[in-house]
Length: 422
Image (cartoon, rainbow, N blue to C red; front, side, top):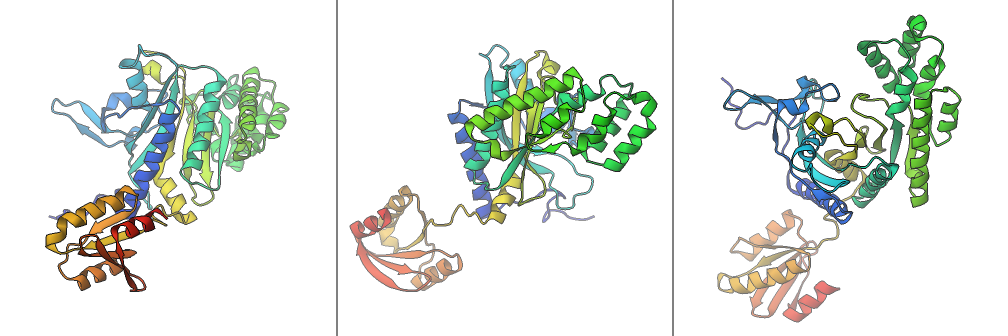
C-alpha cells in the first residue's frame, strides 16, 4: 500500500513565501477597493449542501464537484463557486435588507478537472455582486469596478470583452430546437467553430427557416470595437436581439464617459451558459496568460432558486491567474523594500526587540538573528538576500553592514532612524 503523506493530491499545490505574500496582498488590495466603494463583505462556508448547486440554470457540471457525506448521509460539496452561496445568503439571511445590496467576497473554490495539464482544483476568487437593482447603472458600476480592480492590483495590459446573452436568445427564440440542439449550436458559436456551425445550420435549414439564419452564421465573427453593434443590427429585426444591442451601447457610453472605453471590446458570440446569464456578460484577458482573469455578468435567475427573486450582476477575479500575469509582467511586491537582519548579544535582547519594532513600524522587513556568531548571521543574511545586517555594539550604538558589498559603518539610534526616513 502506497504512503502518500509526503505528497499532495493532483490539482492541488502549496503556495510558499513570496508567492503567498503576493497573493494575500492582491486580495487585500481588492478588499480595500470593494469596501471603500460601499460593498459589504461576507464569508460563506467551504462545505455546502449539494442541493445549493443543483438546478436548470446552474453552470457547473456535477462531475466537477468534490462530494462527500455528512454524519446523517446528506451529500455535501466543497464549494465549487462563490456566486451561488452569495445568492443563498441574500435570499435567506439578508432577505429583509435594504436594497440594492452590495456584497463582496474572497475565498477558495474547488473544481475537479478530468485532465489536469497544469490546472489546479483549488483556486481563489475575489469578487462583487450587486443585488436588487434592475437598471443599467448597476451593470455599468460592476464593469467599471472590474476595470478599476485590475488596475489597482497592477495588471498593465488587459481587455474586457462584453457580450449579451439576450442577443443569442433573441435569434433562436422562434426556432424549433430542443435543448440538446440549442447546446450544440451555442457551443459552435462560443468556440467560434465556423465549419461545424455552418454544417449544423445547413442540416437544420428546414427547422430554422430563413429568419435570423444569416445572423447565426455571422455570430462568431461579431467581435471587435463598438462598430460591431451597427453590423449586428443589420442582420436581424428581432426585438429581443435589438434590445440586447441597445443595452450594450448604453453601457459602453457610460464607460466612455468615465474614460474607460479603451479597455472594452464587443463579442456577441460570447454565449456561455445561456441559462445562467440573463443579460450583459463579460470576460477579461491579459496578453500575459492564455486564460480568463475575470468574468461576470447579469444573472437574475439565481436568488429565485432560494425563494426570493431579485436581479443580480457581479464578477469574479481569478486571483491565481492574476498572480501569473504579475509574475510575467515582472511585478515584485517586495522589490524596493529594504530587509534588515539584527545580530545581538543575549544581554541586549531588549534593545534588539525595541530596534526591530522601530524598523518594522516604518514598513521595512526586519528579522532577528538566531545565531550566536556574527559570521553565521552574515552568511545567513547573504544566502537569504537580506540587504543590511545591524549589529548592536552597545546601547544606542550600532554597526551596519551592507551584506552585498560587505562594507560597514557605525551609527547611533538617531542616525539610523534618520536614514530610514530618507
